[in-house]
Length: 234
Image 1 (tube, rainbow, N blue to C red):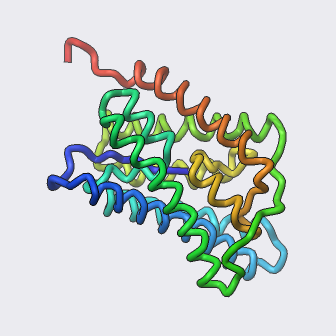
Image 2: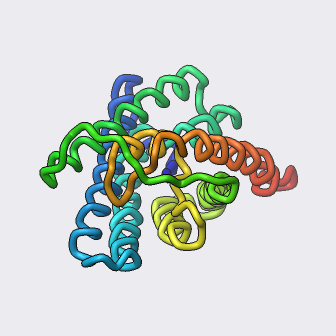
């Protein structure tokens, strides 16, 4: 899951420290939305997983639109190590910044999970028991992340101001058309392993998810970067 919208150029010159804080805070709020809405959905759905997933989906997509819009001008609103690395590979983000974003995103994601637990009276420290194993799950994450890259690069190329909506709507769709429910974000996968709730993933399943996300992100960066490149005649 993720979100860049890099929304460059930023509306104001932002210090390095403020960029890091923006990435950490934005990722924390994103995970609070994902895990909190999962807990709420499961509680209210009375055992109907489809209803619980629908609530989780809509809250996540709506949250992404808001978070990308408000944090985009500060840090680019990546909230996702794969997205930060994508922009570094494309030479649109300094490697120093990308490598600083990644730990900030992971720490923020964990803090967001803990915040959701605290809001719903859950034990703060948890380990998920929800297995999401198998090559199909890893492949689903590769597809989900590839599609996320397409949403980001395509919208930035043709409709930059629509990027928050494109990312949010894509994640809403990907929750339902991918077998993995579209994490598409290594920081999200790591953090959700610390929540034994509706949105959780067992630690044993995390490496396969991250591998799929990295592969999908890399293929998307190379293939879609070429596809959406500006023609020399433009």
